[in-house]
Amino acid sequence: MTAGYEAVIGLEIHVELSTESKMFCGCRVEFGGEPNTRTCPVCAAHPGALPVINEKAIDYLARIALSLDCDIPPGSIFHRKNYFYPDLPKGYQISQYDQPFAIEGHLDISVDEEDIRVGIERVHMEEDTAKNIHAGASGRIAGALYSLIDFNRSGTPLVEIVTKPEIHSPQSARVFLNKLKNLLKYLEVSDCNMEEGSLRCDANVSVRPAGSSELGVKTELKNMNSFKHLEKGLAREIERQTGLLAAGERVVQQTVHFDFATGEVTPMRSKEFAHDYRYFPEPDLAPLVANQEFVDRIAASMPELPDARAGRYRRDFGLTPYNAEVMTSDRKLSDFFEECVRHFNDPKLVSNWLMGELLGYLNATGGELADCLVKPASLAELLGMIESGKISNAVGKEVFAEMCQSGKKAAAIVEAKGLTQISDTAELEAIIDAVLAENPEQVAQYRAGRDKLFGFFVGMVMKKTRGRANPQVINTLLKEKLS
Ligand code: ADP
Ligand code: MG
Ligand code: ZN
Image (cartoon, rainbow, N blue to C red; front, side):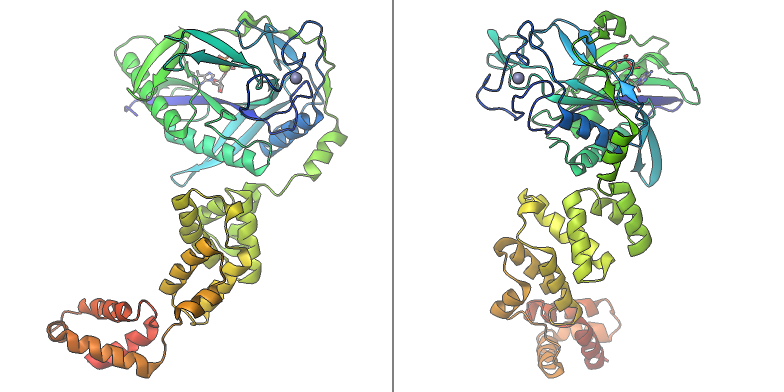
C-alpha cells in the first residue's frame, strides 16, 4: 500500500445451499447434469406458476445468520429485483431488500497474528439464476456463435452475505473469505465448491487518504472466484485507484473486470443503483416470520462453532492459537482430533501430528479426511508406540505414511518390517564402533575440537539402523566413546 493511503474493502458473498430441492419448487438441486432435466413450471418461469418457500433453506439460512452472530428481526419479506437477462426469464429475481432476514453480525479473523473483527451488514435469501452457455471456442460471450440456457441451476437457494466496508488489505480479504468458507462447510449448509460456483465473491474496493473516516468512491470486482483472483485483483485495483488519487484524478464508480492472466483491470459497465431494479414486495409470497421459538430451536440444534471450539482447545489443551485454528478449520478434522486425544492424552502432540503428517499426506495426495484409512484410534496407537520407545519418532512417520496407504495397523507394519527401535546397548555399541572405525578422519577432527561433527556420527548410526536407533542411547554411548 502506498504510504498516505488506506484501502477499504467490502465483500458480497453468494453461497448456494446444499438443500435437496430448489428454493421455490420441488426440483432437485445438483451441480451439472444433462441440461434442463431438473426444471418445472416454477423454475422455468411459466406464467402463473407460484413459488412455495423451501423450509430447509430457511433453516440453513438461520444457521448461517446465527453462526455470524447476526440479529434476526422477527420478520422479513421477499422482494422482486427486476432486470432483464436471458438466464432470468421471469424478468425478476426473488430476493430480499430493505427487510433482510438477518443484520448486524460479525466474523473475527486473524491476520499476521492481529485479530480483526469484520462486521456483517446483512444476510439474506434469494434464488440463483439459470446458466447461459456460450457456444464457441472460448466459451465467453464475445465471439460466441450462439448461446444456450440451462435451467438446472435456476431457483437454487442462494444466500447472500454482505460485509461492512471494514477490510483493509487484499490479504485480509482472502483470510476472511477462507474463514467464511470453512465456517459454511462446517455448518454443512453448502459444499462451497468455488470451481462449480457454489461460493462466489464480489469485491468492492475504494481508497482514501490514511486517517480519513470518509469512504472513497468504490469500484466492484465481480466473480472473484478463487482466493488468488481475489487477492491479486484487489491488489491491482488498489494500485490503480491509488495512482489516480495521487495524480489528483478521480475514481469513477463502476464495475471493473480483472483479467488474471494479464493482471489488467478494465472498466466493464457503469454501476447500477438500487432504484434501477424497481424493487417491490413479492406479492406471491407471505412475509417470513422468524419468531423466538424458531430462532431458539435452530440455535439449540447448532454444533459447537469453530471459534468456540478453538477457544476451548487453547484453554483446556494449551494449543497455540495457530494450532487451535487449524484444528477447527474443518469439522471432521476437529472431531478426529478430539477422538484421538481421548485415546492418547497429549493434545499438543496430536495436533502437531495431524498438522504435519495427516494434513501433509492429504495435501500431497489431494485426498479427503473422510476417505482417510487412518482412524483416530490407530493414530493414537502409533503415538503410544513412539512414547513407549518401541519405535523411534522418525520410524513413526514412516509407519504413518504406510498406514495412510494400506490402512494397516501400526503394530502390524512395525512387526512385518522389523522396525522396532533398537535400545539395546550392546547392539548399538557394536554399530557405533563400526561407524567410528569407518571414519577415522572425522574422529580425529572431533577430538581436535570440531564439536559439530557429533551430529554426523549420530546420522551415520541412524543410517546404518534405518532410523531405528534410540537417539538418547546413541547420544550417551557416542559421548562415552568419543571422550
Ligand atoms: P451497492 O448498493 O453499490 O451494492 P452497498 O452499500 O450495498 O453498495 O455495499 C455493497 C458492498 O460494498 C458492501 O460489502 C459494502 O461494505 C461495500 N462498500 C460500500 N461502500 C464502499 C466503499 N466506499 N468502499 C469499499 N467498499 C464499500
Ligand atoms: Mg452490490
Ligand atoms: Zn422447478
